[in-house]
Image (cartoon, rainbow, N blue to C red; front, side):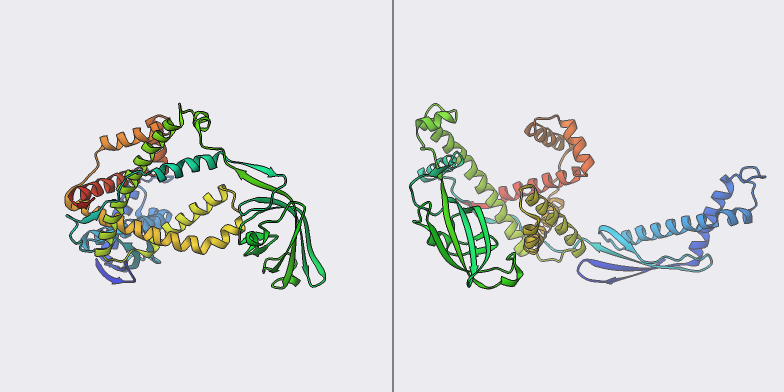
Length: 427
């Protein structure tokens, strides 16, 4: 067997095979004999049919089996001899097998990158403080109050930024009325879109307007305006305010705390303080891990297999788009964001893949591994979090093909914990 290997891009190889005719003939003889010894043809006892008759009936099958065996064996042998670590599935070129002739074919595959890793022990890291201030607690209280807020109608007041108003809209280009709409609900913020037209200074202009009064704003109609004839034209937008609604937040007091199930406001504050402290400690730990990854990726340079990156980027984009759809975002809006989502996803995927490859190499050098007992414990933890049983979670992970990902994630976390212990941390 003769194999030549050429580079076809970052982490991509083309393997050109030439298999001697003797190898083909030997394998053909072997396969033909196997079928001759086992086949039953009408008029002949098992294994007694003439070779020529068997070849006439099963010649195509024999050649297909020869091709499959020779190609598979040659490919695996080449990987072992040349120490190639493939990513994903290879692409085989056209394979034409003729008995009595050498077999030539090529295989294109992506391989994991090879690289040298720098110093990873004794990293200098800076830990963020996890101190909880009164301002942190107050911000959390206001957030809780905001989540309990309700929209109430403002009877005799004036429009303020952040209000929601119900109004009738009329758009005129010159003397022509090009659009009229009733009972339009608008959030009073600068840059809000009204009937397919963005109004940059809406809140500034509307503030102080009373219910029942109108307001006229100069606008430029967008390229999405309903009537194509007027797209891009200067226009006047007239709004007649019919109703003002304002978000009313409950006062943070003893009653507020008791309504949430606490004995007192102090009890609520103490609980919030503890939760914020836990969150800050977790954020500080996550930040240390990110610092480790930043150092590792900064000092370790290598290319990634592009087809592999593209596949995972497409998967990430698809999941993100599905999440946006579930949250109720219109499909047209999602499609507008596709390019930005794709770019962000590609950057994220490349960072995660590089980090995973580097951490895996450190795991090999430091002999970090995950035991089956640890995997079972992790599955049990997941089951408790979802209030279900461990066998069901294990079965689900196996069905999704995610069990290996779970092991990899656990191994990477072990490596990060090891690097944290070896690091020099400044508080």
